Image (tube, rainbow over all chains, first blue to last red; front, side, top):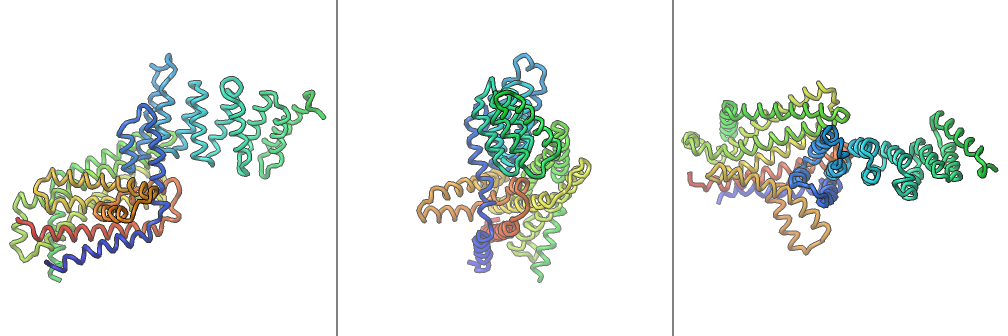
Length: 231
Length: 260
């Protein structure tokens, strides 16, 4: 047996074992978190084996892009106007389950579902999932506020929505528009005290644009003028 | 010294052989079409065209890289035996190990030339669409190159002992799939904390099959960023080098005993 031939084998094994020292676990398991999360997509009825393999082989983002484009194609097809685009939610859910950090799919998808096709409950689920995955993506919070404003009273449970919004507002870096939206919603459902408090919180915030401050002051004045809330 | 000259001379011959092969041009055309398709798909999603171009572009390069490298790596030695050119090489003052290393080096040239060409075309498309080439994108390219090198090595290994091209391609493909699945086992082993013997068996599998998940860093890089990846990149580069040396070492042992 040629001993020279054993040298590369042992050198190789040594290098492989040595590489473990430098390889970081958080990076190594980063995608695995996705894969395990993405197993949840097996719960969706129309999941295919190709989605699973795409995630497994590292084509997660490309596959999610493809699914998103497919969703857009579906939403742009005029033959589903009469039926009200019933598969939009499933297609969107499949997209965001394949890539759970696909921020624009949450953003545009929730707009499509909520404002165009009128599916408030499904929009709520998509936005809740999006906010859980991307807590710093404030665009979703604005959509959440919009959803609350449009459907909160009639079709969704206002308390659940308010809690979500209060949680967002308790974050120090939240967008001031969220205060305006929550205040408006409180006003809409007749809870003027909470509305006033929400606007006042905005006035205490630092580095807020002038237009938001003016808006909050006007709203507080409006509430003060309503009987029962005035001191 | 003579040995190194032999290896380099043979590698040039292998590179020229593939350069003159029609299949090589087929791969180039397919690669250009794949990348062009990723650019066309940006028209369908104009608001996220940057993301689509980056994701689809990488996927295209990886996919065509897989196909071409598995094919080139897994058939070269078998083809050389089939068309009897291997006997011509061995009739010269050239040992079997030199033949093997020279062939592998030649295939590395093919990989580098194909990869650089695809990257160049991709960068042109990125420039046309107006997407800025960031350090994250460059690092993803580096990882992709390491991944393709490992795939080439696995293909080459099966080519060194298999007698059928189809078997060699299928075995390469299967090994790569096992390489991807190893990560899943790794994840659940961490959760389950099995006995030491099972961990040892798992480590053995991890050494034998390529740990492909090391190279799937695109998600991390594009979502978290390049920071904290320096040492990881060093580790993955070491792993790739180690794996290539290990597999080439085994190939040499097998090839030196093979009946030709």
